[in-house]
Image (cartoon, rainbow, N blue to C red; front, side, top):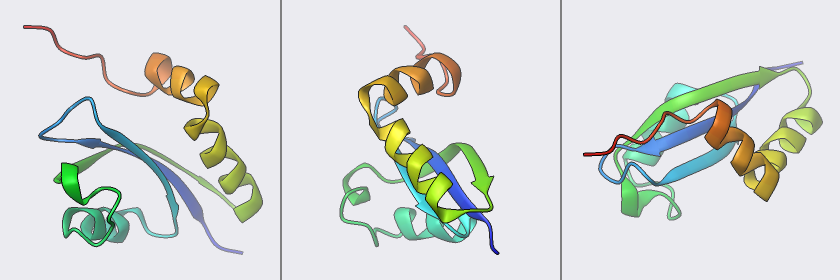
Length: 88
């Protein structure tokens, strides 16, 4: 039984860009995103972790990741997880 992490990244250069993912090691996965090893995130690198949580069961972690990628999950994250957007 291992740990399965669901994480949310925010682009440092494009702060309105977020990415939700699932992994077993958040630090290693962040390095991979920032090294351009993921085609989906390479355009908006560098990234920072703004949230992560872990699950003992991969099925529960995958279900939570799917939820965060859904419309209601994105709204939940915007209200409760993601930092407020600064206005200048």
